[in-house]
Image (cartoon, rainbow, N blue to C red; front, side, top):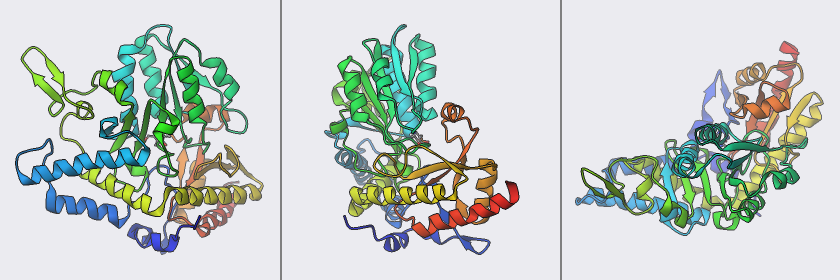
Length: 409
Ligand code: PMP
């Protein structure tokens, strides 16, 4: 694989030239949100300048144009993730809303007392809190597949937990804290063997690696536009068509119906049945452009770049000797991020020192509080990489650790 031309890529991100106190920003907070290339900003700006109108196939030219652009964005996403077609691609606000859509549309109707919902100990709150609260409302139990000492899922425990009582297995594809790449096909197969469904949280996977939902055979799969060079305000829920046909909508309103009387309503075609109200049209155009842009780079090359940087960061941090790193060592089991703690320094203090060097990283529990409880730390510092990051930037982070040691340790 030919490596990415990072220098050329960086030219498409003017924000990376920003300076604070005379130092150029080193943006390593990509697991929270990625930066947006000119191609995406231009696509959205062209849409607003030239084609803006409401969708749902109004009679006039602009509405026709906006509707086509909006519908084609669904087709593009379907093609990108290996879905059968636009019927299987629902636009939401983000991964969180995609989780909630399935919890309410499917879980609220299908879960019964005694049913098990199987999660992992490394779930993001988007899935953990959602299923936990749904379980309280329906009387279902939530069980968590253990994370072992290496930061991987204990698959023996998974096989113990997933049983004929299991109704749903919901697992994160790539952990936003540990970086672990989980065996989501295997988890999905286990779910199916017991007549359960699978939901995969791909928020940290789709931006960074080729993902084929058909190959995984997931029943539902979710991700966010803003973590993959696209805009905020748009996320995706993939669902198998036959399942989606049977689900009750979670939000009601205009644009989703077939027929409404004073007494009752019936629902329109997929995916519109799950997209009532005026949808994120410009954002859909932006997501389409982001996918075109990423595929021009090639997702295999994106993955190789991320793995290489994460492995480099892991090795450099480990060589420091006083850094605790969470999750698997660099390699195929780790996505493009590294969370760690510097001995004797609170993650927030470290992150603030790094900010003094204009290194942007994140401190906190990364919406995985129970996992941090298990790790025995209140917080960690997370460096996360994207296509425009370099080894030099990792070196800047490493060099800044000394300041933190001097001030706090
Ligand atoms: N799941 C994972 C694994 C994530 O990393 C995130 C974002 N931190 C989410 C879900 C939630 O994404 P969003 O905030 O876009 O809903």
